[in-house]
Length: 362
Ligand SMILES: Nc1nc2c(ncn2[C@@H]2O[C@H](COP(=O)(O)OP(=O)(O)OP(=O)(O)O)[C@@H](O)[C@H]2O)c(=O)[nH]1
Image (cartoon, rainbow, N blue to C red):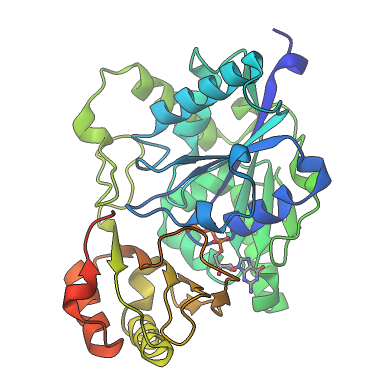
């Protein structure tokens, strides 16, 4: 099959909370993105992002079984194969591009390797390009602390420096230099609130790892070796709790993810007090926090709260509940913060009763 007949796949990557979903939301509203299907991979037991992406359901597919670079690779292959089959059979509206949003902790190399080699994918799809978001506020620190973030930047064709409204000019210049040192070939764009021109991120050309730095070529070689090695389930068990690999693409071993569901309304001020406490005490280790909250004072209009390390973004009030489930759902990706501490502090500062906290996803 000629490249022109293959469906382009754009991979949207970027560290936890760096603005991927915000960019995706903006892109899906642009006319250039009509006829695009988005595949969203979420890390954690309770998926929230797909509730917050404003798009019709037939344009979204969710991979919520773990992290895309590990256990969900098979899911990605199956989803892509299934989409292609349904497209050919005419059972879904025709689509001309797929956008894959990875988790913030994903190593993009095994994902790209899969897209380039999986028999059910090759021939039907081609990688068009890799877009990586980098948070202007947390980016420098994140790159210094997390190998995954460096890999995301290194393989990108386009780098989107996000949250430029929150960063000073000299901070942006320093980050630019840091990004150029890791990946001198990727075009860099500064983006506020996800508002990127689609032409800047789509049709980046065929992805070619050999055109990248020696590091990138080496990572791909390792991904190929790992893919050919006998499958070891123990090394690919990435289901929300500690994603603890000993393989070529080890995540931080002390990073874990958990979710709490709270089945009673929460007072707005008490919740804000709890957020302040957690951010002040453990902001550094709170890699990502997302929540949809049933606020006692406004039961019909939930708030959505995002935290990324020390930075808590202003809560967003939704016009209504995105589904029939009106319980608060809190998702944490943390380094070494036990769930028990979170529960205790919620009871103490946010006045949540212990009986209302449910530990596992419903
Ligand atoms: N001020 C400001 N906030 C932004 C901008 N872009 C994103 N945000 C906020 O940053 C937070 C995280 O953004 P997301 O788009 O959810 O980030 P993400 O990379 O999808 O997060 P994960 O999927 O959890 O890794 C949200 O509160 C966004 O509203 C921006 O340009 N400016």
